[in-house]
Length: 223
Image (cartoon, rainbow, N blue to C red; front, side, top):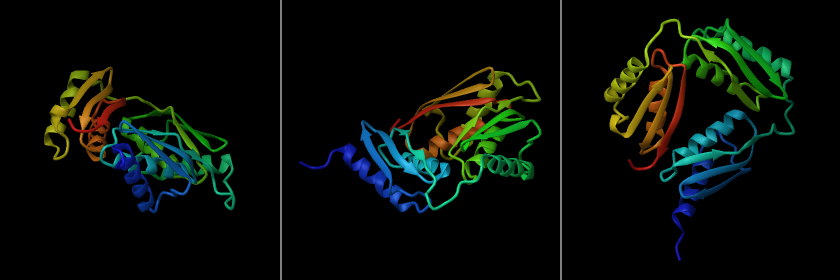
C-alpha cells in the first residue's frame, strides 16, 4: 500500500521547512489530517515560528495551518531583558519613516510584546507588528493597536475599492473571494489555489483606505 495523501503532504512540508535556512526545523513536528497541517515543537525565534507557518501554507494540498510552535531561545544565547526589548522596538518604530508611532505604546513581559494605542491605518498596525516580530528575544507579539482613520469612508466604498483592485491583480480572481465590510472591518472568505494568492488578497485589503481590521477566512485548495 502506497503513502496516503496526508503522508505525502507531510513529507512535502518537512522538505520545505528543511530547505528554508531561516527556519530551524530540527525540533518541528508535523501532522496532516484532511489538508489541515499542525506544527508543534520549538523554534528559536518568533520570526521562525511565522516563517514555518508560511512555508507549510505554500505546500500544495494544505488548506489550513494550525501553528502550535513554542519559541524557546537556545540555551547558549542570553535573552535581552524586557526593558531592552521594549527600548529596541520603540527605537525601531521611531526610526521607521512609514510608521507614525506617536500614539503607540510598547510593553514587554517575559519576552511577550504587547502593542497598544492608535495608528492611522491598518497596514501601519501590521507593519508595527512585523517590527516587533523581528526583534531579538521576542517570543510572542500581542497586537492591540486600534486604527483611527482620519477620513470617514463608507463600507460600500471600501468593498468596491477592494474588488476593483482584485480585478487589476494578476493573481487574485475576484470571483473566488467574497468581500464583506462592516464598520471598516473587512472579512475575506472563499477558496484560492495557493498561499501566494491568499497573501496577495489580504495585502490588497490591508492597504485599502478606510480599513481598520481584516479577518482572513480564505482557505487553500481548488476553487
